[in-house]
Length: 267
Image 1 (cartoon, rainbow, N blue to C red):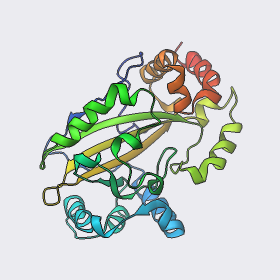
Image 2: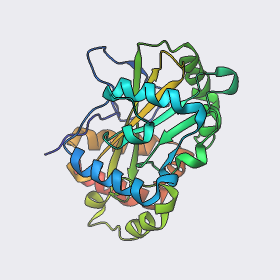
Image 3: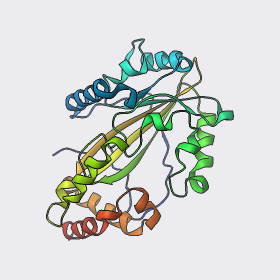
Image 4: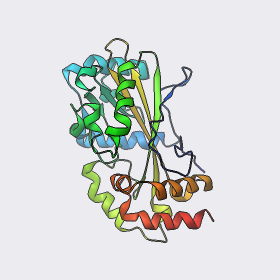
């Protein structure tokens, strides 16, 4: 049975956790899961079908893209070409804190409810405007980290979601497909059809340009395949999670079905 690359819920109680950690220097920024071949094939199909939707680049970002490519693959390429061989979505933030570290380039094929072109040019706080309590709880820490991030060091954190579809691409253009999957949920299949989704995120300051490379590796498993302690923690977090956060994560429509299913599984 597969294991998630990381399970971020260390307790059964919800909390706003920045959860940033330093990546050991012997560890690589990018990773591979056993879904590598399938995901690379899917990513390249998406890019071929609608490159302008899944990627954005400007003259301003060219040097940073090449620097990121060398860092990740030892080859000098555009961010788009680099992304085609990696499971990770790739984003470059401006290193300039005076402008709020806006997004200057990106290749994002497996987002959870957003699109890179919609976020292009936004500073980090604006990007996170929809996140409940971000401004009060996390903004200061995030901006401090980005401002003080030194080259040669990488930091990582994780994020989680529960989605009613196995689709990796859950960008706005796929919303109707995800809603169709959600409409099929019932008490008998919710554990199979709902997926616990993890984003393993890294931040690295690029030495020459001073810009910041942000990577996102998405991994997921059906709820039924989580270990019992993971199911227990998830249930506890869901039950202690503020309603506004449940809404933001789009769990509300199947919240009751999911909680009842988890209750049965952890008995």
